[in-house]
Length: 478
Image 1 (cartoon, rainbow, N blue to C red):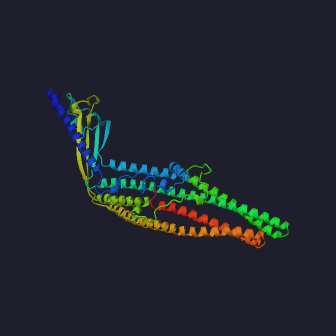
Image 2: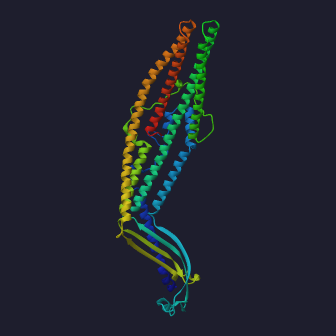
Image 3: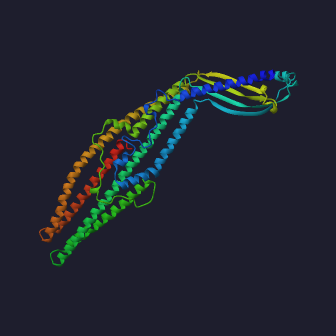
């Protein structure tokens, strides 16, 4: 019994040593796995729909129920958005791989082999006279059976692996912001296309009203011709303008079909027609964002935040490349059972273990490491310039959209007055024509000018809606 206990002591000692080593490495891994003190405060993964004032900013900004319904469908079905989500999953996988490099690697091993040493070798001569088990000499054809665990762990003394983990984390967050950017652009493009479609519907309404007036005027001219107060040339002029208006209507209908196709593409759904508010554009609610925008809102733009995280990742890459010049320390260990016969594997005397530490440092031909370091430095400078340029672009976009809002507001007021005057002139010209105090050319000219001004007013109002959509995007969306 004492002999059995004495013989099994190496086995238990090896077990204790291996478990101690494993627990120590796990404790170090948990310590390394904590947030790095140099990580940015924004290292927390933001919500996928986070914005500068809240998750539902777009819903509070665009209050048209039809546009909200289309936006919900687009956020659910848009293919570009789904592609962006898969990029986030790929980035998360890169983080998992980078974190795994910090932990010890433990693998199970099992093997069987056969080896024969020549008698005129040191091993063969020694084995021919050495007992191996129960007084038996080591067989010439020596079998070998083994089973156990094998572990390896690179100690992250210089922070190379932690820097790679930080880089992967920052790039994942940049991918999240890239997804937010795609979402913001999608909502803005959808709103722009929707207001374009509503404006085309308003043009149809105005053209139809002008066609009705033109038909009434044509009937008046025909009556006057019968009475000898007008000639065939006047009728031809009125008929030509009527056909021109009908052609304009067909051309506008073609644009409506094309615009519906744009919206269907954004929705990821080919179904038509697109539901929308077909009331007058004058009655539609114009979304408004404050004309006094704090500069702090610019840093919440997805493109700026993405550039910021890319800069953080590039900085971590430089640290990892610098650490590659320093020695790396690794620990390898084996714990298991090994015997020349399979039925002896469970014997305490079959226990085997080893623990080896090593240090490897690059000495000669370090050009590859230097090249990686230079590449990382260049990437960092590139990311810095991209970050600074994104801030400039954001400021310019916001400034332009706010200026457009003020200009279009004044332009709408002027165009509204022009439309009112020209609509009145159509009525005046028609009354004068009926009493033979105005020519048919004056009536035609008044109708054409009135229609042109009304369509221009619709264009100005459409641009007002679209500028608000662009300002929503310029401020970061949500």
